[in-house]
Length: 225
Image (tube, rainbow, N blue to C red; front, side, top):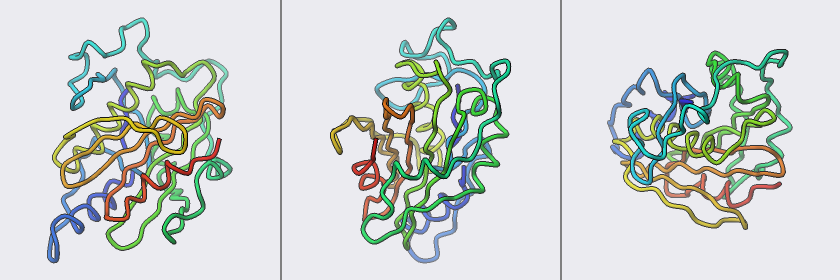
């Protein structure tokens, strides 16, 4: 599965502003990348590694054909729906900055067959104040989709799309926030990507974050569920 982080134009503009100073021109996001405000899979398996995301199939950590995620909607399954109730998993605000929906990204996400095949409900949160931004997805997975290989692939390909806007991935690590494991990828220019899986809710939260307030870290540290 390939993930395309949505809202890329906004993210690229804010990153350029934050990193380039006055007069910096936003760099258009690559066509294949979607923003932190959404997580839409693109077709084809991806590789997960402990370093920067590798080319599809290049890493020993890549899912084998037997475990690779399908991008075909299961027979009889309904299309994904925008579910605002998933916002309850997130804090309503951090550092005085409201965490709200960015609904236009849902329309972008459901044009991707892998997103449609693996996610049945989703919402796309955003928190922005000046040069501080956190933007991403809360995705409820279809029954039977989750596996360690799936989650590893999700993170690697989401990171690849997000970090493509900021000179690639520089480091990957995990830490404990709010009592759960959070995977953190640091991209060039100070961009960070955070991932959390909430097994009791069947939900993955992925957020891209930039700016001195570290809004993404504050949000994933206060997840509910």
